[in-house]
Amino acid sequence: RARTPHRMSAPGPENLAAADSVAKGVGPSNEHEKALDFANYFSSYGYLYHQKDMLQDIIRMESYRTAILQNKKCFEGKAVLDVGTGSGVLAIWAAMAGARVVYAVEATSMAKQARRLAEANGVGHIVQVFEGYMEQVELPEKVDVLVSEWMGYFLLRESMLDPVINARQRWLKPGGACYPSQASLFMAPLQSSLYHPRLQEFEREIAGWSSFKHFMTEENELELDCLDADWHKEQRDYLLHSCMWQQINPSEIIGTSTTLLEFDVGSVTQADIATFTTPFRMEITADAEVSGFGSWFDTAFEGSEASPASHPVLLTTEPPSETHWGQQVLLLHPPQPAMAGDVLHGEITLGRQPENHRLLWLRMTLRHTRPMTGEQVYPERTINYRVD
Image 1 (cartoon, one colour):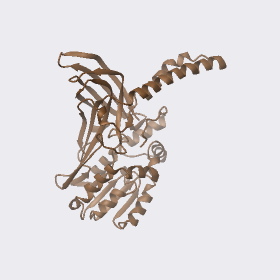
Image 2 (cartoon, rainbow, N blue to C red):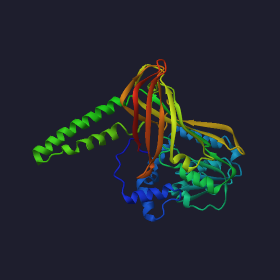
Image 3 (tube, rainbow, N blue to C red):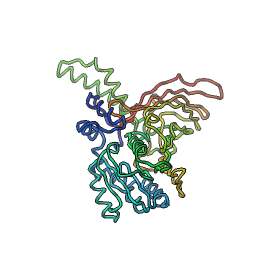
């Protein structure tokens, strides 16, 4: 998972067609669309260095290992499906927990490494690895348990929950358990340590454009003034309105958190998560400058009603937790000074970018009020962000 936002090229009709097919939950409709989806997303997951980044995430690994191996009664003698198995570690643990068979599905060539690791760890006769899109793989039977590590930045980036939903609908038996079973997405106001460095970088880019224009006029007899507004918008969108990865220091959080989304993995639909709008309310707890918002997620491993986990586990990325997911920061430009007791409220819409359904866009309508006096401290604002 790239830890800094990248500058996206303009969407072409081929990218839009491929995104549309995959987003419908059926996978690419032809080899060309498959190649585009691999280029846009899956290619990096076929490398061990990328798998290593996730395997050395202590919180991630301990949460999944504990959830599986401390709940052996939920796995013993069961058929298990691992969606997006990667290097196969979750499938191997499921086998170690006593699963009768584990079907491990992986879209990339990492499937070959998963097969080798299962053999090397003595469970090759239990773990059956399928290389292909989950939406297009046919299993020999229904399963009792579905495990997957599908979470991305901002919980939903990468759209890996889609194949999990597809697999659940097609292959999970009634009463079957999903690991994880629940997920929640949170946001809180920040006095962000990232704001001023990014603002300075933005100002350098604007000043550099002026010098560049002068050079182009003097050396090439070309006037570029007509591009000023486009250059400013491009830099502002990238440097100040793009979601950023950070390990947030808890001291940067200056208010209460709000829940943007929560759902049961066993019942959520693609329509529930593709685009949604939710109200929010955050109370400022100290006099500070609101210069951003931080986001993180939790996932719970509780099994199902028919097969509850005897040892529930909570995986949280809330600060100060340090995981490869980090936390996500949205800057507020310009910042808004606030007093303890002020309330930030409004609506947030989160959806998928049309040119690449694995990336997100976010629109925030922000109101800032002071309950003590009943006044609106700042005019209402609407800010658009990219979660690349």
